[in-house]
Amino acid sequence: MSAPAPYDAIILGAGGAGLMCAAVASQRGRRVLVLDHAPEPGRKILISGGGRCNFTNVGAAPDRYLSANPHFARSALARYTPRDFLDLVEKHHIAWHEKTLGQLFCDGSARQIVAMLLAECAGATVRCDCPIRAVEHDGTRFRISAGEREVEAPALVIATGGPSIPKLGATGFAYDLAKRFGLKLVEPRPALVPLTLGGDEALFRSLSGVATPVEARAGGAAFREAALFTHKGMSGPAILQVSSYWRHGEAVAIDFLPDTRPGWLRDAKRQRPRARLPAILAESLPARLADALAERIALPAELGNSSDKVLDAAERRLADWTFRPSGTEGFAKAEVTVGGISTAELSQKTMEARKVPGLYAIGEAVDVTGWLGGYNFQWAWASGVAAGQAL
Image 1 (tube, rainbow, N blue to C red):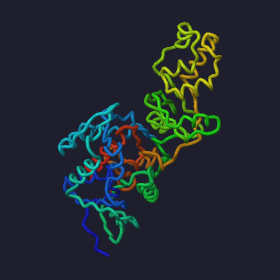
Image 2: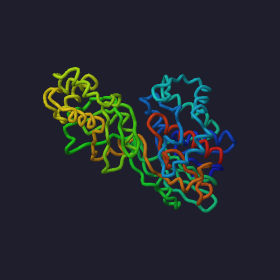
Image 3: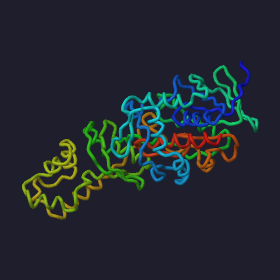
Image 4: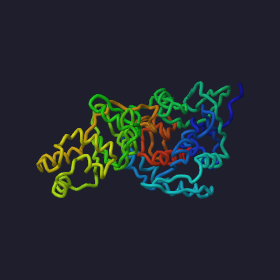
């Protein structure tokens, strides 16, 4: 076994947060070692955005993140903004474009972002395919047994993420390590994840593959994007967004026609009294969905045969159609994790553990979770920079 190497900091995890932290710290002259059990760095970066990496969002702000302490992310996000990361992207001549809702993507490949981060980490040592066997702390230094190596440093950064997407090697290692050092956790649960339906909602399984713009609401949050029916339940951006706010046993409400004004069905009756509800709905919704909704509402054959009161009730149901999901598709399909290492344990300026000097936690391992659309990468960059500047 080799003798301990002289490092100032050891970072566990070669994802976005860990690499950014290593880049900043090494450029400040710190001797940094990054360890990861995966065969290559940045595996979540590589699959994100359909392989083009939705690397940030121009709208990133603290109110678009979930945390037991909603103010915790404010400091890091203010000190490292989407513009700061975009400057880095442009410095490396990576072409990019903006999609809807402020989402920024590479024109080419997500591999460009990983290559950029590794180039910025040129002064650090990055070792992959290096599983952690043991972590010890004598009060002043951290000793890590990884593969056949044993290394030590006065600072240790937990950047191993959460358990979402286990097929990429994601685990709850960060939580086990935090608990070992006496840090509290906020219960981790899948986020940005498809919801499953059962029982009374089984009819909608026949709509697998149908998508439509909606407003979805759960847990006090509302998102206007597309919803997609699947063979297991519901997905699509609107559903993924509200899944982060949804709790088991609660309902999810859908407005299938968010752009209509009150009284639109009364107007339709007056203009076309012989029209049927499926045909009216099919003017704004996919035909299969229109038929399924009309079947459940069960109006008399023609609009002219329904009273205004009945039509108003149908309108209200279409605007507030509630589903009670049976669950989610779990960490296997979750893009990120809500919960994690409690922010009450960390300095919001440096990300250092208050109880354990020299121990830091960043990225998805921490109880800070962004919306869909580049927000979680921005938290990875910002928290990584915060810790990198403190090491």
